[in-house]
Each structure stands twice: as structure tokens, then as C-alpha cells.
Length: 465
Image (cartoon, rainbow, N blue to C red; front, side, top):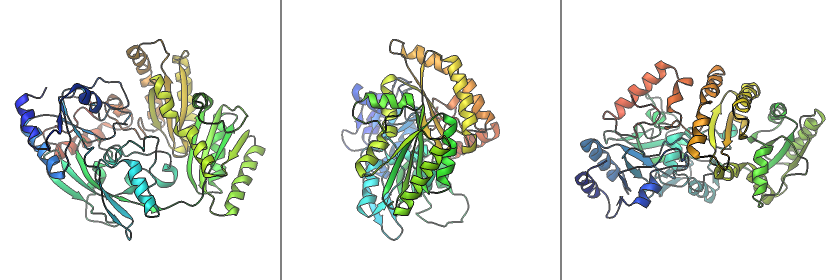
């Protein structure tokens, strides 16, 4: 734990009352959505300026105190959890949009800007920020960058990485680096900006980001299609991709839909019961595009790939169809799910899911398994729901036993053990299933350059040595 004298010195570096040590604050700021680890930070500090962040990092180096960055705390890998007496650096106060450039279509943001705040800023200027996910109303941009967040539009727009035009970062030694400066083209050696995207705060803290925007999509339209089995989803994807420029292609199982409908606030898409569902979205910019979508739907029905379907006819119906997918994570969170966020190339998805499903069914016959994911980019979410009467620790221990088999399959398919949730603490012991020993050694060497004293979010990505 950090000694009182050091905490007293810390309090002089930020605004009055911005070093918190009360139990409620420590609990709230020390954890994320995983709930796997008990939070135990020494303190929470809320800087307001870049200079204050630099001062905090230099203080931490002097006193050899570990720092954990905290954004919206919506992460699912325990990357923002402070479980070992660290000081949490929360960016809630650094939450302003600083500048907008209409010519370059860029926005300069502080790290505490909420994702939805950036999306609305783009809309106000007739533009679009396409990185979107269920936690957009609470996740912060710094956290999105730290985990290279993906979401529901990756098939068309890519990950957060694709939209970062420039970064200001404070390294583990307190230096301020300005990376890329918003340039579209910059062939001057290493692009250090990319190292900090997805680094989970282990190299340094993002203190400002220049984000690119896109033109606003026109007349977004969604379809929900019911399929007779999972294998039918991939030819449906191929058929629609051959005719339309999709902005999203998601899937979910009947078990997931049942939990959504049990909420009572989202209507069923249609009366037919199906074991799997695909949700696709496209721009119906002309009547011809909408007609092509309907013709492709009819073709899929004729081939036996689709049993039933519906296409949105209004903004309200579009939102309701998306709720079937977007509400899933929040809805099943009440069951304390054990989550795996895995990916392979799109072509390998059917065989990959069959193998994973067989292993899970064999070892968890008494657990409910809910599948959903961004299947258009090869990302599957495996969720095992905790039975009501089972102790949480016993449940997680049982689920962890099968990780080796699941990740061995991931490795055999040349996939990733974490497609978009990051590594944090929940996946660090399994990193070798996706990264070679040589790659891990290189990553550790990079961390040593930017964080020579090992104070920046230690114990995340790499297992303690």
C-alpha cells in the first residue's frame, strides 16, 4: 500500500479534493465489468491537465508506485482493475472535445470523452464516428484506444485503430510524446502511435487524441434473418456481401434471443422460432439497393439458408432490431457470465465454432451457453451463464478448467484469444496461444523502453515474472 506521506505529496499535484481514498471511490474506480478480481487500490487520482498527468507519473517513479488507468470501466479483461494497492488514474475530468476541423474531418478529444459524446459531435457537423458498441454511452475514448475497441461496425469501418489520426501520450517516465499530428500520410520511420493503441496503458497514458470522422451513412436499414443452423449463416453472409456493401453483420443464438425477449421491452422480430439469427445492416441509399436486398433474401430462402426474416421500414424499427443484438451483453450480465472473446479468419468460422461448441457441450452439459458475435469479421463471443445457486468462485474455477482446450483450438486455427476485449489479467496467462515466444519477448522489450521502472499498469498483458 502507498504510504501516507507519498499520498500527501500526490495531493499537491492535482486540484483540491481530487485524490480519493474513501471505500466507495476505491471500489468504484478500482474495478471493471469483469468482476473476477476484488478491487484494492490505495487511492484514486483525477487529473485535469496533461501537466498534472506528467506530474503524477513522475511522482509514481519517485515513490515506485504502480499506476492503473481508468476510463469508463466497461472493460471485460480486467485491464483497468487495481487489485494490488495501485493508484488509479481516472480521466473523468479530462472530458472535453477541444477542436473540430471540417476540412480534415478530425476532432481533437481528451481521453475522458465518452464514445457517444464523440458520435454526437460528429452528427452535429453532419459527419459520423463509426466505432460503436453497447457501452458507447459510458465507455471513454482513452479506454477505447487502450484496448483498440471494435464493436458492431468493424466489417465496414474497422477497429478504433483505423480512426486515430494522432495521439499525445505520457510515457512511463513522464515524457510527453506527440505522435503523427493528425497526418494522413507520414513516412518518417516508426509509427509509435500504433504501439499505444491496444497497449492497455502498459506503455503510457493517452492524454489527447485526434480522431478521424466519416461521411454520415444514408438511410441505414437492417434485416434480421432466422437460419435453420449455424452453417447457413456463412452462405447468407457471402450472398449479401456479393450484392451489398454491408455496414454490419452480426449473429446470435436462440438462447440469447430468449433472454432479450424475457426483458419485455423488445418485440420478437417475427413468429418463426429459429436456432440462429443473423442481423445485417446496409445503406438503402436508393430503391434499387432495397430491392436488391429483398431479392437476395428471397434467394437465401430458396436455398434453404433462411427460414424467416424482416427488414426495417423506419428508424424505430431499425433501433428495435438492433436492440436484439446490442442488449445481449447487458442482459446476460445479470447471470455473471464467463466470457470468451475469440476470433479467426471469416472463412474458418463454421469449423471453428463447431469444435468450440463440442468442447463446451462436453464439459459444461449443465451450463447454459449463449453464442453471439460480430461474425462478419470472424469474432465470436462465447458466454457461459452461472447457475443461480452456484458460488461465483466455484463457477469461474470450473469454467477456467476448459480454457486450455478452447485456446488450443484457437491456436490450431491461427486465431486470437482476444479479438476486441484486450488481454488484461483475464487472458495474460494464455497469451502464448496467440503470440509466439519471440513476439512476447519483443513486446516486453518495447514496454521496457517506454516504462523503464515498470509502473504503468503492471500485471496486465504479461503475467508477473
